[in-house]
Image 1: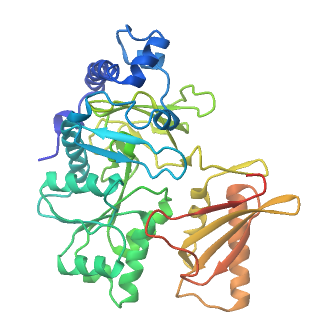
Image 2: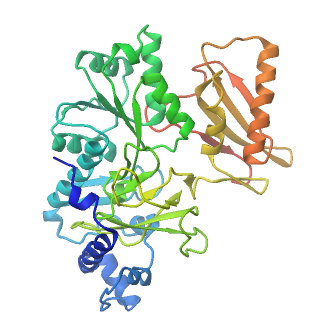
Image 3: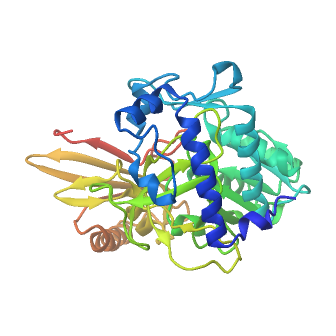
Length: 432
């Protein structure tokens, strides 16, 4: 049973005491790594005894660049012979990031994911299909081991091959799937193109989505297409992978499991804490990790703590849906824009499909934004209607992002689609 009532409903003072105890253990473990041992000595932190959670702020932040510059094993806190798995980012330039796991780390991670799945109503009687890539991508193995720990029948279908995915869902009476948002839409479209209605012809009830930023409008569209409840999942390989935070049945923010991490939200420029309810960058410190503890890791993800308590009864704090990443923010003509703001507007138009591409380009002396978005296959090709729709979309986008983009409506399936995360932005500007 993965309803860990004692932990999940623990009173806040007791939860903070638990975090403090585990933080002391984490600092002691981190000192065993080459990176943190040297850093603590340089910052005169090697003899600091952690007396309160406020002491965490005395420690410097850890960044992805730190992981890359100490590639491959500079953060290892146990001998490599005691590590049983390595995950690595897909870094396209320079060194990738490497994350090491002991068997105890993997067991804790499986329990964490199983807790998430149990929270949204999944049980050992469910049939779970994972459409994520396996290998170095943590979304595959993370959910695989979590679902097995829960006791569900698991189908490691991996990424792509939509016809095979559909066959498995139908033949094996799948009740729950895990997919990135863009692929969940593609899967739904596959059913309808085959003359099937997933709401009637499958036993799907639950969808777990993550790995890509997505708007509430996109989530509602996915739920409508598949006839499921879609729960948002947050994870990253540096923190193990999926299961760091997860939505409860209230679907109003993600509970961040504070017995596994300490969460801070800071201003991404000043690095000072922001007030509850204000948007900032999520910073995480691992707890209960043997092989590779990380202290004050800058995730670059922008969110906020949701004030108040949750009616589900869980006391672990909630973070809001991510606004974007501090490193994927578009700056155009002095305006800060996040792709998810654009998606929020596009998804409000039933005449539009689900695939879109934002292209930034230099035209003459000016930088412009072109938004190409596919039409629904149910929509007309009448020029006057398309022209009117384009004006409506442009007007709403201007209200949202405070500048006027060029909007181009294109035929369904005319924009590129990959098997992994959707590519939403292409920056062709001369100054980048």
